[in-house]
Image (cartoon, rainbow, N blue to C red):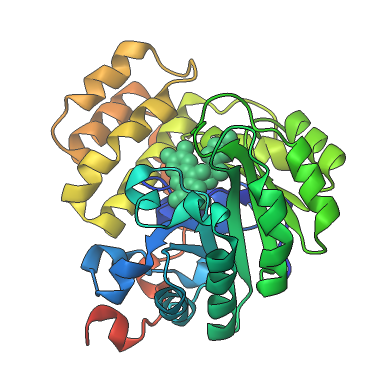
Length: 339
Ligand SMILES: Cc1cc2nc3c(=O)[nH]c(=O)nc-3n(C[C@H](O)[C@H](O)[C@H](O)COP(=O)(O)O)c2cc1C
């Protein structure tokens, strides 16, 4: 599989909707990922979970990430993910959130190498697309579990490993220790992706050079800031104008409302206002003003008052967008409960 750039857009729960992935690709990400999808949710035909398998034809190459603890259920979920059109099935062995770890999924599997390998083997047997794994360094601070389990996961069938070298206990505190990434690269003969604190081109280049990783993954730095991806891939380095920021945000809002429905999108989008409008781009009270508006349409209108020129920028962006409804992959009937 050919990935056109060495930047991967990170999977982020509550963030990585289709609009986020499309935008990430437009700004230079070579591979984009869905947020983690519950294999139990897929197994039970949970409607919201199935919604994560709404993939567009234009999204390729796209990895869909699954989490769970039962090899058989994970294998079945992987088949659904492949049928839905994903190019890669990624397995989550990194989620530190208690709701997930208490079910035996996510980062806890780093301390259960036998089960973790069983999952990778079952998933790799079930699908013909590449199967990859994303991990943290381990559960406790200082843990080196990822280095012990990584080579075994490759033996079990993982085609690539992504390492976010923080412990689960750390959550997002401290810094990602990429000396572990360098050690992992030495131990395996598959591409390793370095995740954690990639915030600039200089940082990305330093991590690639010192670890030997095949690619870097960008997460939080891309929230409300796709221009950062462009900077990291070396495509542009200027700061975006207010008109560009507002146009990207409105496009994101419209696409997300289409994907999630207006009601769900209204709450979902709130965190994005701060991400887009912060970073010194707009005065702080402006975000507060948007947060108290009732509808997405009201927010849009207020944004255009603040940056009238954004309408033209948006019109150009929309012209270049593929028509989502026309590009949705044909989902197998079973996925939408018999249609
Ligand atoms: C809001 C949020 C949600 C995340 N959700 C996921 C997820 O669903 N699956 C996953 O493997 N990692 C998830 N992560 C971890 C990121 O993919 C990434 O490894 C981590 O944020 C470190 O990279 P960064 O410093 O570039 O943000 C999430 C991170 C954040 C901030």
